[in-house]
Length: 477
Ligand code: NAI
Ligand code: MG
Image (cartoon, rainbow, N blue to C red):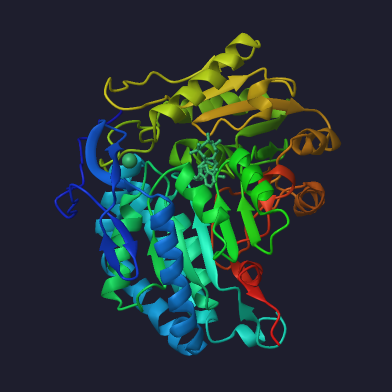
């Protein structure tokens, strides 16, 4: 007997969205000149008008950050900086539901995830880095390591507030000031974070938020007053940034794309593995740079596992992101939906076999059913290119060596997963996988203490943990 779920929508009454937003510069909101709409991708409802930052806005923000760096922030002790970070972390916890609802409205991801994953991790990042602020001299980074100055930070739309936390928390803990640009489709939680900075009485200009598009991002990258760049987004833009800063003194960390391999050996516990596969690719609609988007199955168990996976996928609830029962929400934008559709069609055309469970998708908004492709080979585009959607490409292998070769046969190297009952096999495999993060018998687990980053086209440097601090510091005198 199966039970139907009654709708359980979270109320949106807790959020107060203004009709129009400016930029947050030097502790206050300044009106922008041009605006663009931000929408709820589940309904296409226009939520607000966001300012399109130009050169003069970026100029003002960098000047404010420079002034705050010289006059205030670099003069504070680590202990004092830490107090502000603790205060921000606590306010974020107090206002967690507001942030969760707002993130779900603007991004399309399920409230279950914003409430239980994104926002708790955001607070955890601020708490973790607050603890480091007064201990940098003992972090193994040399005697009294020094901040760079003003950090330019450009973030994507898949984890809007979490990516802000990954960037802002270590920058402030290490004594840098910040000019941050959120992604064009998801600026609202960053603008609410600006209010949190005011509420925490963070000194003016320590955090500046300029909204806008790629041209605004490029203006930050190219600004001579920026000393360090932290970027998360596409490999294509990552390469542009690398070219733009070549020959300058600007430091950079780049967190780019991925095509993570999730390898299942024939001794893996299959039911648990199915849960891990679902979490690996359908978490956040697959808009995850470290998603387990290539499933690599040992031949002996492949058919049985795929059958179990289909049974499980038929239970994934796709729909209203504000409903507490929803597992898979809306695709973030029309552009991203087109990209997913185009790559999935390439999978069909190249001869892979597509399967999705029956799904009732709303005509309004941007939706894509959870999908698997079987019969995928290394030559297929869906095995090589990042789809960034709820689409899993399934390949198979006979020998463990073949699994590793397939897993590493990619221009990326961000994440991988290994499923096996044998510890020795897991250790053997993790040592050979060229990926920055390898999960064993789990997937998509994050912790602020754990460094994150990739090899090859997945980027430069690490964020999180002690490794992440290092990129915001230079050797002391
Ligand atoms: P994108 O790389 O264009 O956007 C990321 C951020 O960079 C946004 O804030 C954007 O405004 C900014 N930006 C764009 N051009 C810039 C430039 N020339 N200089 C400085 N900043 C610039 O990513 P997009 O177009 O939203 O997504 C395209 C694909 O990228 C996705 O389909 C996915 O495959 C990948 N992606 C990967 C992410 C990751 O977490 N590694 C996150 C977002 C997208
Ligand atoms: Mg939006």
